Image 1 (tube, rainbow, N blue to C red):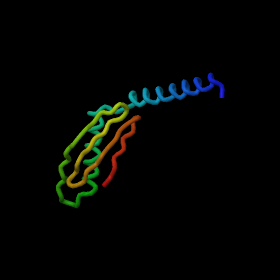
Image 2: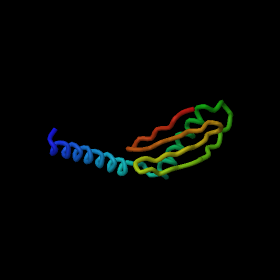
Image 3: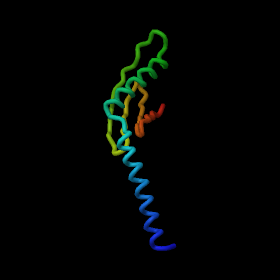
Image 4: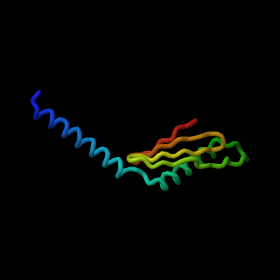
Length: 96
């Protein structure tokens, strides 16, 4: 392999990584917005799991972290704990 080809390869890989990190930072949801959306989603989850006439369990927020290209949030609904991660305009929550 020619020395110039190796340098071009690393330059292209570096540019691709810089674009991905830049898009991640730009498309990352705001922590407050994500927290509100997670709360809305968990309220709907609690409503679907509740029996008729039963009161909805309280939603308690445990921890929120703002990473470079993502936001994480941990919340509890009754006895169930959910861990949610949002990045690139997509939020994923695990289900117990």
